[in-house]
Length: 271
Image 1: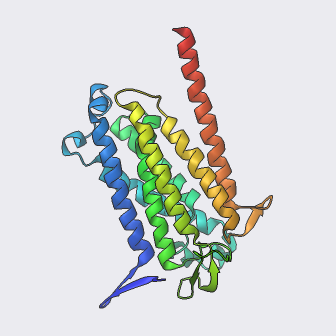
Image 2: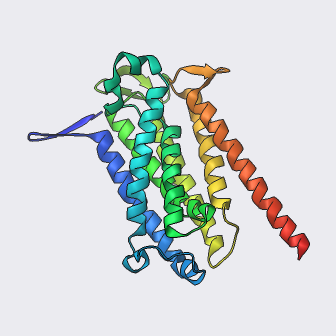
Image 3: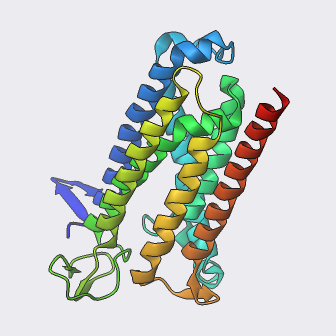
């Protein structure tokens, strides 16, 4: 693997490079979603913040802010999973390695709630907009984990596509499951599904929150299953921390979807 790219005196971590590329691609995806819904948003009178609608660059602003918040949240969550290490060496807070998916989700979610208010778009509708982009960004970021060999790989395997990471940040000479590669393909498939699901809302179809619910459920299920072949330590009832967080994601997604369908059914009965 290639943890670092050396360009003369410049050293670039491949993980950071792929995260940056992931954020850029996610911004393009989000911008495309804004553009295809622009007329619907403006007609409803819910999109009147700071003139961004005239510049058509909302996606880049949102991903820039939410991406930074997500990285901070991912790092903090990872560090707080091992508080003894933090107490022993506070400098781990600014390490370039070790980011937790659920912490990134929480950090990004808080930022998106604040941004939804700024753009005057209902939170659930805003989350629907951002869900495909979030899945794409995560998928590409996982390639950074693969290139750096940062320990996000899986357990040993005899499968022909098994990989070793002798030069990784967390090296191993054993052939292991390339779980970041699995996640790359799975999250791209989820992103494509969510994008197609978004077509139901054009123009004005579907119910706010359906796409976000699907995001919570599908990504939670995917990460929960992937963890069975990951090397992460177990904590809660034999589950890893990521699996426990994934269960929370699935439950929240199912609860939100149930609330949406119940409200829609009540409206149908009332009419």
